[in-house]
Amino acid sequence: MSSNVTSGGRRPPRSGRSGTRRSGLGRLGPLPWIGPAVLLIVVVVLWPVYEMVRTSFLKISVSGFVRGWAGLDKYRQLFDEPDLGSVITATVVWTVGVVALTMVISLGLAQLFNQRFPGRRLTRWALIAPWAASVLMTAIGFKWMLDRTAGVLNTLMTDLGIVDSPEDWLGDPSTAWPWMMFVAVFVSLPFTTYTLLAGLQTVPGEVYEAARVDGAGVWQTYRRITLPLLRPAFLVGVVINLINVFNSFPVIWGMTRGGPDSDTATTTVFMYQLKSSDIGESAAMSVVNFALVVVMVAAFLKVSRWNQEEA
Image (tube, rainbow, N blue to C red; front, side):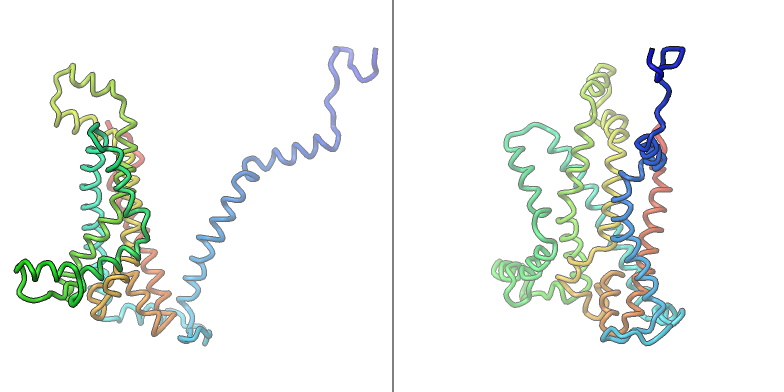
């Protein structure tokens, strides 16, 4: 009998270099697999946040030269801005209004596209168009359409006698805000609608069949079955829209550049306006903006009880 075999007929464990190497890799667990993703997050997310916070404590000239440590001076300067309060209020109204309209309209469109009707595939493809186009390009296109002198809308309304003279739609905040909200909803609908449509298509048909057998009406079925089962997809749509709309820059900058003054600016646009005069104050506005969006999303998740199952 070979000397490598024990009396019990089994070979003793090998303790060579390859076994040591394998046990070393085993101790790392999933780190080799998630390491690249963690590194990407650090480089793309955490490092820019660190630089943003650090810049907010520096004195930086308009040309980009660091002039020294500023401490909290940039934050004091920011909170002394006379337009800051109105900009934050406008941002909250803008975010809530656009997200609410987007979710309601998308819910109706998703319900429509979940039905069978002639041309359904064509209309589904047509809905992708605002999503496929550049947001900035869409905003500029609407800006040209609303132009006071050569815009299609003013020309059409004047020819039809609806208005006596061309209107400056984007020059007056009372009309500029509704138009910008319309464009923001327009470009947000595709993603949200397809998110809700995907959620609707995961609802088993047997559930609706059982509801019909139990005598439930259309509204009862929708309220007690469809909406609860659609809740995860709905929460995803709301959270992503909250972040995107709150940080929306191309729509507002492309249509009004936040003007006149800062009357049509959100915090993101206001931050960009400050950059031309004080980079440190602009960085402070970026930190405040980042904190606001984190608080807003956390508050929504807390209120919506996202991690709790429906009773």
